[in-house]
Image (tube, rainbow, N blue to C red; front, side, top):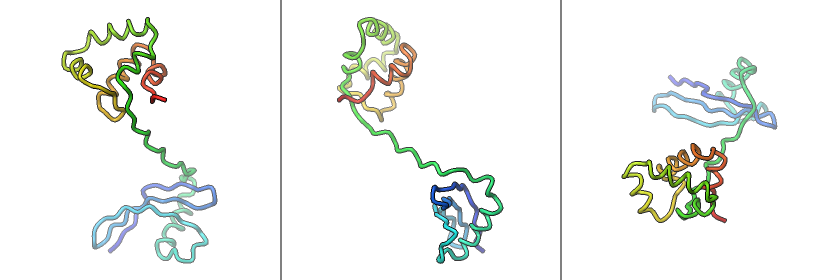
Length: 145
């Protein structure tokens, strides 16, 4: 026996409904992304199921929000944030860095660049944000142009 379960649904701008459905059947479970259009002559049994589901749950279906793209990965020279800091900010950050543990200091000193996909990027961003605010941390770690 095959069962179909709607995982999520949202309305598109042209009247279509975007679905994420789970199909459990003899050959296992499959997650499927699907688009339903009421005028689709090839929708078949799944289309009939989705039409009924739409009718029953129409108040629960929100607008389609496209997924946000992953941020682009980039590297900057480890001197870049320091060059962007004012003298006062550099003095504050020097004090912050002097309070970090030996391991983190050695990793930072050995690095030649900072990579946005490195787990320690978040640590550096947090240190900068705690000292100067998140917006300034973003500016200091922004891609080089």
